[in-house]
Length: 367
Image 1 (cartoon, rainbow, N blue to C red):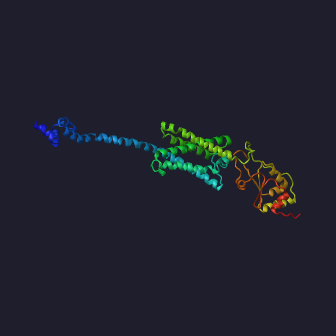
Image 2: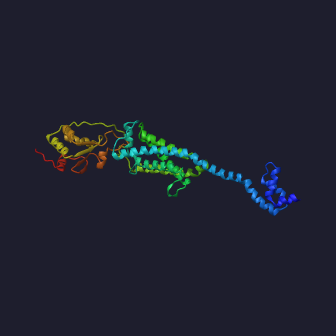
Image 3: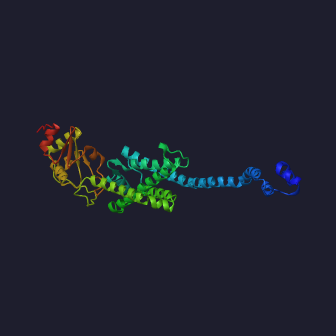
C-alpha cells in the first residue's frame, strides 16, 4: 500500500524505482498502475504521449516536404535542356536577323543558293515583320522561363503553374508554326533545302515535347483543347499573312522560269548611242525582268550597242518561281511594273519613247 502511494504521489521516484527493475521502461508503461487516479494520470499522459509520438510526427511532417521537393529536382534537367535548346534557337534567329538588316547573304552549308532564295522569299516575312525577329522573341521567352522557373523567380507575380503553362503554350505555337513552314517548304520549294529552316523545326519540336512530358496525363487532357486552339490560331495567322502579301507577279505565280538573257538584235544609231551615254552619265536606271516582253522591246529601241551602255537592273537575276523575292534594288524603288525608269529622282513605269526619255533626262542632240 505504501509502494502504491509512492507510485501515485511521486512520479520521479516511481520512474527511478521502475528503472531498477525494468530493463528499458517507456514512460507509458506506468499508465496502467495509476489508472485509479484519473486526474493525475491524465496529466501524466499529456506529458508522456508527445515524447512517444514525436518521432512519428516529425517523420510524417518531413516526408511530405521531401516528396514535394522531388518534382523540382526532377524538372531541373528538363529546364536545363529547354534553356539550352532555346539558346541555340536564339543565336540562330539573331544571326538571320542580322543578315536581314544588313542585306547580307546567309552561309548555307546545305542547299546553297536555294537556301538563300528561301530565306529571302516572301515567306520569310509575316505581316511585314521578318520571321527571324519573331523567332528571337519566341526563343528568348522560352529561355527566360526555363531559367527562372527552377528558381521560382518569375516576374509580374506569375506562379509556377502559370509559368509552366505559358512555357507549354509558347512551345506549342512554335511547333505549329514549324509544321506549317515545313509544309510550305515541301509544296512551294520542291527539291530545295534550307539548313536553317530544318534546324529551327528540330529545335521547336524538341522544345514542345520536352515541356509536354512534364505534364501528367490528366493535366494534358485539361490543356489539350487550348493547345489545339493555339496551334489553329498560329496556322490561320500565317495563312492570312501570306495570302495578303503574295509574290510580286500573280500572273506568274504557278510558273517556274529559269533566268535567260535575251539578245538585242536591232542596230544602234548615233542618236541612241549618245542618248544611252547621257542616261548613264546622269545615273538614270532602267529596271526590268528577263521575262518581260516590254523590257526587251525597250532595249530593241536603243539597239544592240546602245543597250549595253544603259544602266540596266535585272530584278530577277536568279530566275522566277512562286515565292521568290524581287531584288532589293528593285524593291527599294517600289516598282509597280516593267520596265521602270528612274531619271533625276523620278520613277516612271512603262515603256517610253526615245524622244520622251531625251526630254525627261535633259538630253540635247547635236544632230
